[in-house]
Amino acid sequence: MDSETMPTVNSNLIEVAADLSKSERIDRFLAHQFSDLSRSRIQALIDQGYVTVNDVLCQNKKDLIKAGDRIELVTPALTTLDLVAQEIPLDILYEDEHLIVINKPAGMVVHPAAGHSEGTLVNALLAHCTELSGINGTQRPGIVHRLDKDTSGVMVVAKSDRAHQDLQAQIQAKTARREYFGIVRGVPKSESGTIDAAIARHKSDRKKMAVVADGRRAVTHWQIQERLGNYTLVKFDLETGRTHQIRVHCAHMGWAIAGDPLYGHPNKETSQYLSGQALHAWRLTFKHPISGEVIENIAPLPEGFEKLLVFLRRRK
Image 1: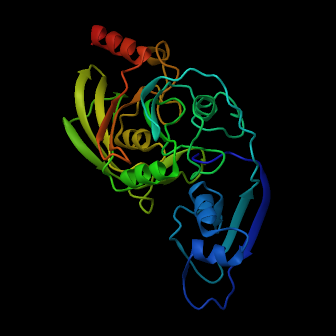
Image 2 (image 1 turned 90 degrees about the vertical axis):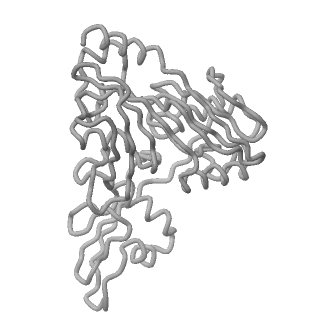
Image 3 (image 1 turned 30 degrees about the vertical axis):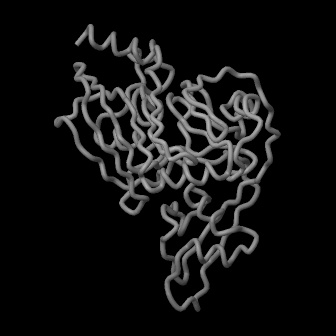
């Protein structure tokens, strides 16, 4: 889940009045009903699976509701975590007064949340940096984009609001390039391709995402690097950045990321080398938000990933 997993404190049931003259977008309708919730907050609750319509999980903020629909909106508690600076070693790929680029290890959570109040990348950054951007709020200082807990690799963090806004704009405009290496369990038939399949919250499991026709557009370009028997080393180039995008797209194609505990089938072949999925953010390329210089950052493959490759090469 993109935001903190927090305890539920309130469930609101609404029956759309019979005199609603025409269909209306659900985010607009709920924003009108709940003046204490901003529209962006309501959209986030929809994305996180906290809204149902007629007992069916709402998948899209643009869904239309009509007279007689029964809507349930769950509002989790907005708890504030006390962030603690912790002296945790950081693998720094690049740093100046505007930003810092980190090679995040697998197993590290990016920002504090319920159940992960310490030991996160943010805790480490607070000990290392005197200033971080505040655009994402007090709980995620400097965080421009995320990596899943068990995905390793390169991330950029903003030290100033100006740098944060520029970097985020580059990601949204698709001018920042994000490339990953992954080992999939399966054998893609072609050598390369593009997966263009919309993603939304899973209809029955809120921890998971899924390919859903009316979800948010998600585009992943892929190219085979090496065939390893019944496994394949693949390079992924992200055009969009949806939650769990590569993992969901690969599972949808029938060749899930090796060792993925949520979308695949972990087994002894991978677990002896990796604690989670074999997915690594290898290269991140962007323009420096102040100088305009092209910055290319490469995070070497982690040791466990390399050892798994050696094992698969020997037995293929």
